[in-house]
Length: 344
Image (cartoon, rainbow, N blue to C red; front, side, top):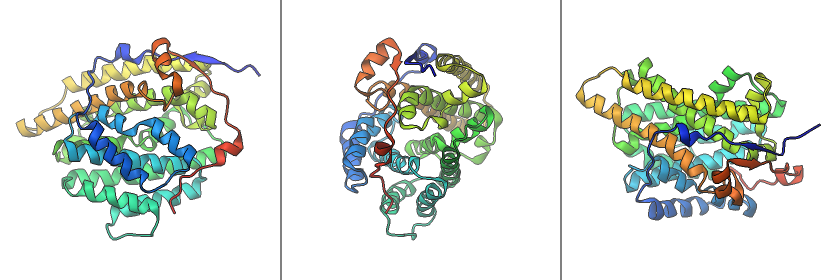
């Protein structure tokens, strides 16, 4: 059967008027967080090299450019923690992924929980930093998102085990949770010193902007990561695969569709921000800062994707210039099995 050898990425920068920035604490606080996660020796040499290529701290620098030193360090710790959970569960079946997730969830919910696992220790460190200054509303919402994230990561593993690709609406619902973007958005209030009332998150116009921003991150991430994921046999959890199946598109057609829909999402996001109701001057100011934070995530995710080898390997600058992604041969199964990511 004919296999496409390359495809052209959509130019998402062309339809993104949002302005990016970089956190001034990136080098120092980012190095602290990298040393912290590496001190646990979670990965084999191969996995550690892949982890280092991802430059998680640089992602945080782009997506939380306003965060103070301590807040930035905590956000780095969380993204590094997410990487551990994601890497472990990517190579587990449904039951094992659920067990891994439960360790993370139990630790987040209960400061006294301790099963002796490395994952528990890492999560405890983050929890202590986050809960020390997160407001009660923000903390409650964060824990809800933790539970939803673990449920959907476990569901992703089950779908992978069954070699099942979801329909588009079902996948969008799953992707919003298993991408962890809601958890990353859940750090905004902590980083900004806010604790917005629940009525803000119950408002449909606010959530229209929220979901549009979240979906822009997910759709961009999926088209950028498609080659990396298909090379590992993990492309079932990717909007590109879903679009090819649901809409009978080839790879290029699916990539083009992502570009068109990203513009729809951007227009929806900008429009919703203009139609927000008022909750009073103080809350309105907090809502504006929160939504500015979503804008930094959308733009920062685009910028970071072409500043590391995470998705495009050593050719990332070439891909940024040309938009052409040459598909990587699929890894042999014996290499895919080797994972140094362990929760014990």
